[in-house]
Every structure is written in C-alpha cells, then in structure tokens.
Image 1 (spheres, rainbow, N blue to C red):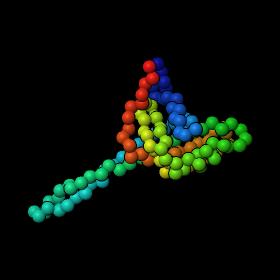
Image 2: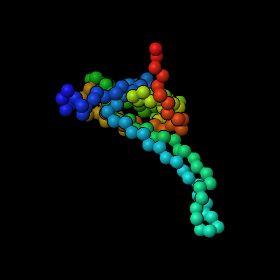
Image 3: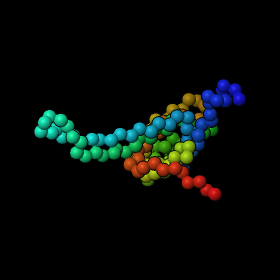
Image 4: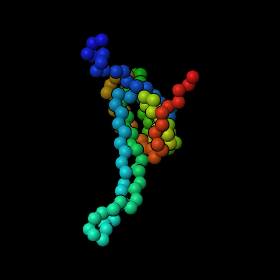
Length: 130
C-alpha cells in the first residue's frame, strides 16, 4: 500500500432528492442554546437548554456532460425543500431542509456544488439490507 492510497479516497455518492452529488467534502455542525439566570449570590444557573438543528454542508460535483445543465434547475428547485433524507457514509439525516447552495460550472462535464441543509432530527445509522 502506497502513501497516496492511505491519504486519498474516492468521492462518496450521496443521493439528494433525484440528484447524486459526488461528495468530496462533508461537514456537520450542531450547537445547543443555553438559558442562564443569575442567582441571588451572584452565580449563574442554567435553567433550560435547546438543541439547535444540525447544519450539513456537502461539497462535490454532479456529472452533467456537455450541453445543457438540467442539474442546476434541479438544485435550484430543491432550495427550501423539506423532508429530504441524506445518507453519508452510513449515517442518515432525515427531514432535512435545503437552506442554500452554490453551483459553479468550470467548463468541464461537472457542476461543482456546495449544498447546505438543516435537520432537527437526530442522526441514525443507515439500515443494512441483508
């Protein structure tokens, strides 16, 4: 096994709606809002907390071939769409909403896309079909 085999891997195909994004970069970000109240003795106590929706950012490419770019229309129509399920490397995020995208045509057969989604549902392991 060479060093390049250890340090590289193929893009991961991810189905989003009817599109397949060959994902080269994936990021998930989550946070919790804490509600704090001062105490009588000058301290602070957390009185409540609320988990915010996880934000997913997938960057990669969609094969378009030469000519028209129907994938761009499909991505544009996904913007604001809810109830999508995204599975990345065995982890499933359900009830996702597309919150934004960027798409770039670099004069080759690919459309380079960064897609941002949000999901308030907990992530789960993808089911393995036996």
